[in-house]
Length: 498
Ligand code: ADP
Image (tube, rainbow, N blue to C red; front, side):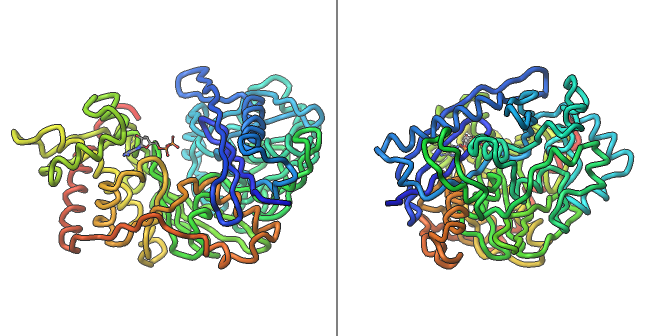
């Protein structure tokens, strides 16, 4: 008797497994953190074997916790940290180098050179992305160029490249399947999001042998079956999506204009743009949301570098709160921020400002200012930054958003969500199950296996836990936003180095 859909959620700091019932209810979960490796300033790596072993351990643990067996698992959905690169031997499965993590900046200089040589337009038009070390291509090139013997072995067809989803699929299937899905492929800077194929011109620009690349399969579909020797059962891998796209799916954002924000350390906003890949010149990236059958859905993505991290700064830097949750309690001690604005541009500003030289600002301080105003203003900055990205997206697709779906650590903060509702003038919806990333992968798998017949059937599971409505007027909103922009201007072009 099948009961559970298993989601493997391979994140940047931990591997997690969640078991869901068909109705989207979470029935078991397990999590293991693993080491972050920092070989040099700005470099970030993971041990691929640790990623694999922690992932398999939590899968087993989640089942054991409820006395479940593999026979009770319908199938597996995989969601993962995106852009991170692994290269391994096709025969032995041994990685040739550590995984180079999305955060790693080692290829920054090469990226600058590419931009200087005028490749930005070409890359954007094919991949929807901006030239940045963040995306996989330059990291893969780095491994080929810098690890002894790797280029020769790759040219002989002996090596596989993959993002973390491919690495897990390969291992789960006992080396039988080397595949990925378009949501992950679209983050590599090697994948043409219009032709939906690896792009030969880009492969040659980066010197990547085609034989290394995984086969791209629909996000919802059977990728293969787990090897009995690995899990003790043959279980279908039925869904794969990068973490942000998976969260968009898990938030039921199936229609054009549907949008979610994840308030984590940084914030990730994704808007479903339907079957059209909108490309913009305003710093948003265009990405594949998912592919179901032949139908491709696209998304616009924008991020805010410092979101929950600003709350961590209140806790660990300023030491004005003891825990992130405290921020709400203290912020409520004052009716508003008393005219104070905090622009948490600790590492520069992203969309719509794109200024790596921007730095943080606390402005509007008077003799009456106290720590509660600063705490409140910091919380509000999360909402202002989000509103800036939402407005950019709205103007890119020329439509107003119907509501904002939210998740991530800071979405627990009701004061923040109330302010966000006022900032956008729409309802904010927080789901009952905040594990939207894992849920999305489980749903993609469930669709492939016929557990759900359609997106409409899935939508029946969408039961927001809270809906927060705006209480302020349009004038109030415009006045606040224009003051915020004035504060942002004060933060721009400050530091001497990026
Ligand atoms: P990530 O996945 O990026 O590690 P999470 O989604 O786990 O992030 O969210 C953690 C972030 O959310 C932290 O930066 C923390 O400061 C912030 N956070 C957690 N709870 C709250 C809260 N109640 N109010 C405001 N911020 C919070």
